[in-house]
Image 1 (cartoon, rainbow, N blue to C red):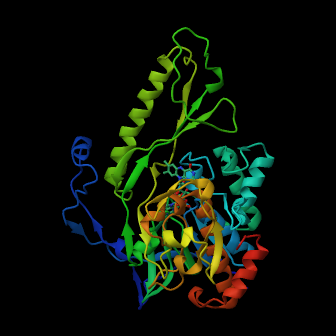
Image 2: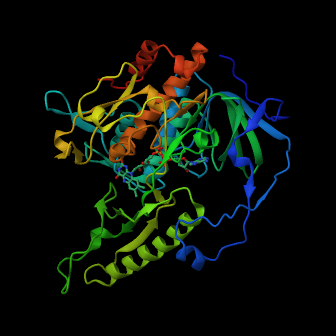
Length: 449
Ligand SMILES: Cc1cc2nc3c(=O)[nH]c(=O)nc-3n(C[C@H](O)[C@H](O)[C@H](O)COP(=O)(O)OP(=O)(O)OC[C@H]3O[C@@H](n4cnc5c(N)ncnc54)[C@H](O)[C@@H]3O)c2cc1C
């Protein structure tokens, strides 16, 4: 495979190349926080705009595969593509991998198990997800065999090591900022960092931003799902709570983690929130920080809890859902309840919660494992693009399982392997020989049922 990586000042905006919808910048006078609070989730953009002058952008690299977003899906995608032989770049806006799993302090890796056709509970998440869980367990940094809860710093370290070992070229502190299109063909992505605006050209791009930034800029159709947004935090010294103290009252101190003195505390947060509105995100961030701080003070003032302290709030706000791509196939709840087989299966996920199906509650312990087809990762219009993670294509009824870390690891792994194979075979991802993809996935230890 030809490997090229260079920094050259070239004109990206060639004759037929165009940029996605993000290149017109709209401006509006600054808003106060009071105004934002009065008007939650309501964008103040009034239509005023300014034209950004055209300019030459340095090309950082021409690569085989570019993954944007380093959450569970992005890490799995980048490693799978690189292990399949493709030169792979991974772009992440923050300073760590794992996305909401680590930076969001969402520590339980759910949906690792489900029920098979003989009603036996079995592990379904293998491949890279299984490898990550095993490495963390071997380090004493994951507890519970089913749906393990991990330590976030250990997970960041393990993911870095896996990315390094796989030879992925990592770009931290870098935002995917817009797409580079030639007709319907995605040619690469503009990135923004302290080094300025650059371009990475790629044969295949995998959108693992969680919010579908890339397919949004590429002009794909999608469902905009407003959902509840929270802010997870951790408490320290939970092992020093004195239950014998006079006046002791049991407080909500969250769930255990691999570190005995530390608990993680989930937050449901406000319902029906827009996860891609920066003003709304800013409002929620400040309100939640205050809420968390005040709650922890109440805990500390409760007899027996004096030594408990706020260890940290998540560096990533807990956006559960935003955009869901309208891909070649939209996975349905029916598919997941009936052991539906897909010829182009890329992986299998499990269950972590009770779901309503045909008016009846199906409990976690009865929930069948379910297949995910490659088609639900392939957008309808854009060539050279795959979508993995919480924004792949599924109907809303399925959201509780599709957005879960185990499922994101599976879709990421499948997308990465498909991208790697497409590069190797010089084929469009939508024309891949599925038997070759299945073979590659099995070689990479993915369980396909
Ligand atoms: C409060 C909360 C509680 C949850 N609880 C659980 C739980 O207990 N167990 C469970 O399994 N799941 C849970 N989830 C769901 C799960 O954490 C997420 O759905 C999952 O992490 C999504 O993975 P992802 O890779 O698709 O996206 P994300 O984890 O969101 O990762 C996306 C990554 O892309 C980066 N990124 C985004 N845009 C850009 C850009 N333009 N350029 C560069 N980088 C970008 C982000 O910084 C991030 O690192 C919870 C979610 C929330 C919010």
